[in-house]
Image (cartoon, rainbow, N blue to C red; front, side, top):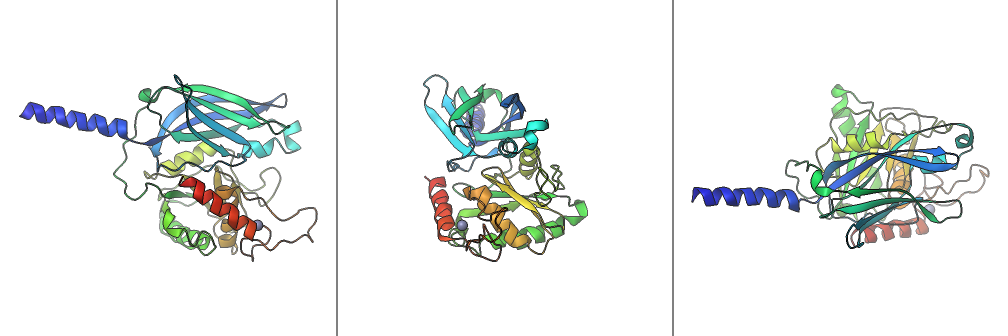
Length: 325
Ligand SMILES: [Zn+2]
């Protein structure tokens, strides 16, 4: 009887390990070499439980595709933008060399699979810039403490930047105050129950700074891997990440399916976060025109004292629908 119990226990453990749906993260560095993107793979890592969401694919600069190695069947794909994707559009990239630490995340496949990354070329066509086989059984599963309520939810990790150990209560209060703002706007308000927001209560540093690409208020980091690691160190599942920077000076940024950041102590932080989350969650464009300041639209993607315009609302709704398909 004891023996049978042991076998049963072993089976249960194995089942638990292999049935676990978790994210795998592929880390890589990317730079421009002779005007072309050059990707160097760094490694795969188990990156926490997968909620079951399919990251809504839209017209991002990058497209990630995971296929079964033997059958060629498409297993997972999503589209995103990145800071490197923005860098190649700047004049600075023609004269300066810069390396970006970026990453893609995808659910662990059951069998050996092929991970491919595509980037849009100047003609708007996706061109493959990276390919690597994934051997899922060779990657250790990070067993997390039992987490409830994350499946089929949009899990958001809120990560502190520049808060020390003694400021965690302050960070928690900022996180509540700022993320609440998102749900004061439609259609997020209606879909509030679909979101699960958790905070990483550990000091983190992912290298955020102002003056990204020369723009004073553009508060970003070129180390997305550090952002992912910071989000994962909370020990809970996450699909999207918001970084609160402990600073009073106006600033922030948001990139589609990448991250959103905001200077948490600035008086406009709540509205800035809603605007940046619009970029990060739904690939919304800025509606202000740096060259023509008189061009105003009735939307928070233009002016912080506005609501989302009907077009942006529709885009957000479309993303929400696709996520749960
Ligand atoms: Zn709009």
